[in-house]
Length: 118
Figure 1 (cartoon, rainbow, N blue to C red):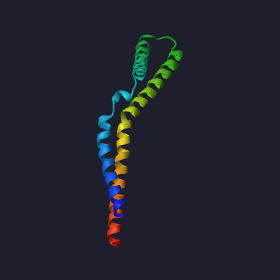
Figure 2: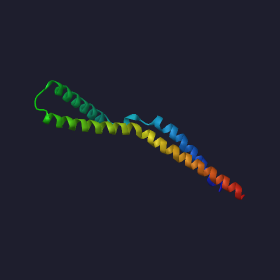
Figure 3: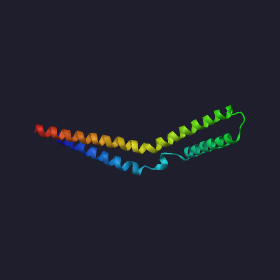
Figure 4: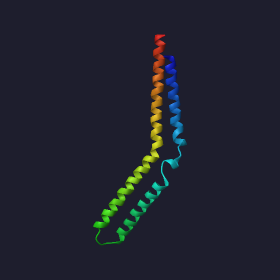
């Protein structure tokens, strides 16, 4: 039982150290591709151009509003994907940290249980 507690404590410490190191070593280019960046930039330009045209044109806006809403939805989705990609390493690190805390706690619990039996 003492060996199992030592393994759990070691694993927990390793996981917590990994949680600290992992987000700092992730290659940021792997999180967001060049194509995704271009798509986001094009969607942003489309929204900017539509809002600029919208400010200068006082004609029928029903068709323009639909296309503007579509462009805004597309940009919002792309932005949400970017935010998710930026947060991914930190979410993984958080999970590693909590798994490490749980493994270390389990290891200490097993250690104190084995001390009481021995």
